[in-house]
Image (cartoon, rainbow, N blue to C red; front, side, top):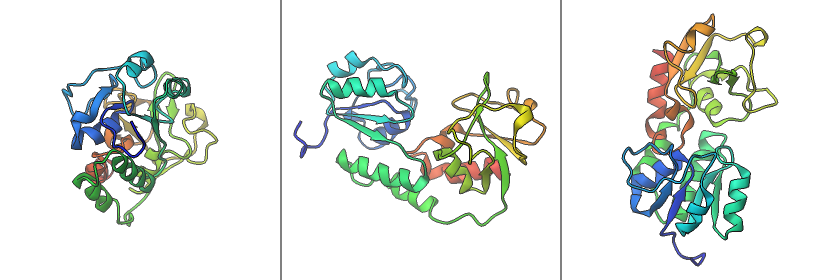
Amino acid sequence: MKKTERPRRVVSLVPSLTECVAASAPDLLVGVTDWCTHPSGLPVPRIGGTKNPRVAEIVALRPDVVLANAEENREPDLDALQAAGLHVWLTDYETVPAALEGLAAMLSMLGLGRPPWLAEAENAWAEPWNGRRCAALVPIWRRPWMALGRDTFAGDVLQRLGVDNVLAGDTERYPRIESGALPAHDVVVLPDEPYAFSADDGPEAFDVPARLVSGRHLTWYGPSLAEARAVLQRQLWS
């Protein structure tokens, strides 16, 4: 494919980017990961997980572009795809504005213009938060316990909803944590992915109130951003 041509065959290694393309032009997708669950029932070949994609199968699909993320996908896999002559579109968003801008650029590259959900997402996040605030610990995994640290997209989403991550100044993006060495916090925010925290699995480990939230709305960037603010605001503050 010439650089001036629009991609006609797309492989997505990122569930949220898969949803972005599927919402506007599902026929472009020729390969997605096992974790690409939205929309459900997407009739596209599966090429492995985000951390263990089957590179040879991706190459055989002859995609014009592979959509990837610097955090979700492993560098050796991306290097192997590029060494095979494939164009990799690499994303790495740490804030809501960066995600909206980056998604607009990706959609333009794919020739998809500005779908309605993008404008809805921009409008949803345009106004600053003027409500009350709280300090939160935000675990993302158990056994071992890990939490949101510095420079994360989810941390920025929460900050824009009045929730300040107490580990935002940590040297790591996803530090391991121990119950006896945590900064003071008002609540614990427990998303249902990547670890499936639930009312019966997570809150009992902490002595502060727990807020169970949608991991997709907290961590995905794509069509879900259009409703994420309202969904998370209700889950965090109701």
